[in-house]
Image 1: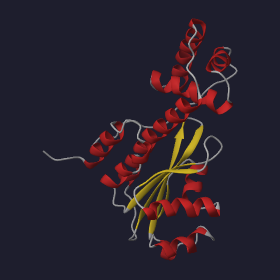
Image 2: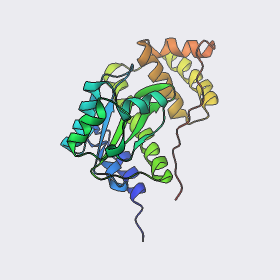
Image 3: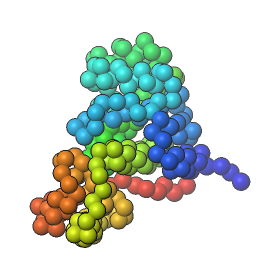
Image 4: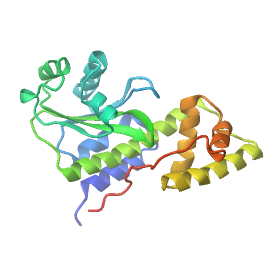
Length: 231
């Protein structure tokens, strides 16, 4: 029986139990890269390297944070993958490019970490030799990035909030979840997480956000992450 490296990586990530330090490792299991890192930054979460497969992967993040430029910043700003297949011929980032050339890094591929409208961070993949990713590999990396986004968001919310416990609050949130589900066309779990995330981002109780959703003061657009990639 042929083993599908991507599916193996997906299962490893899903079964990680929310162990944040291991979030980067599944990416190197199915992609032609040397190392990987997962970082949070932007308006929602503080700038931090959450997971790195090796010291050089961590250094890739560190340089981008220190210099304020690089593939991860562009990936989150454009909400799309940023691929740099060969730094020997690159002039994309005036400060980051010459700095990374000193680190034995020949190529970097950055993928945004997002959940609906929320910007969470990025996944950086580096290679010590020049090269690129196929369209399928990019799609697979985006799928794993979406899973990582959910894990990071749930962790941040659980660390910062207390659950809603009153019957009234639960009823409001249930009603709001149904409305969000209809808006984003995703699962009930994702609709609920969007409400949690909005409350977390605004530093408000979920009940208040649910009331705004029910009264149509808050509306969510399509949730575009793809959860499955067929062989």
